[in-house]
Image (cartoon, rainbow, N blue to C red; front, side, top):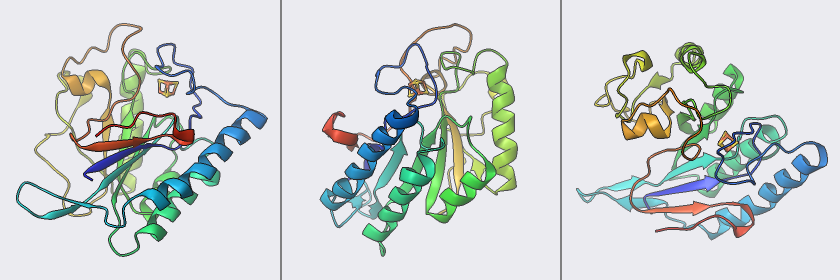
Length: 234
Ligand code: SF4
């Protein structure tokens, strides 16, 4: 299996009007506890059902680690981060102690703090995808997204996490790095991701629009979500 996109929880702090799924919404008090408990119940069962060998064969015949992309909702909000997200990362390391999968985290980034970066890197995360950088997402309209990107860049630089790009961005204001500069070995990296960034349309100017977060995925993937309600593709 080349990669797996894992929706660990429906909980999200935003209320984007275009959100494709009404399960991704703010949860408060007991509703947050309940939705986090759903994710807590699910992750051990999901891990137990994944293959013992989390590798795949590339075109050159070499075995490569499977990529697991951890996503929500939003995994870094209070009530989710310590209760569900970090324990799930720890459980992944326990499940495959000798040949762990590659770990990527998809986050909106607006609740990201330096200590979260430390905690994720310490648990084996090598890629942090800052998703939803476009006018469609709450809080990202207009110039705000560019100020937000600079704040993230400064935080990542302090932690030695290098920016990479998936390509496709057209606006010089994005200051996207050369997509040819790929990660080296297990080097921690981050990237900005949005439908418009990755399609090349770079449409940052209008309100309303297509679906939420986007992270290009290889052709062969599995998608998991709590309570078995997510799509599953191959
Ligand atoms: S579009 Fe993304 S950030 Fe917005 S509410 Fe939905 S899951 Fe959350």
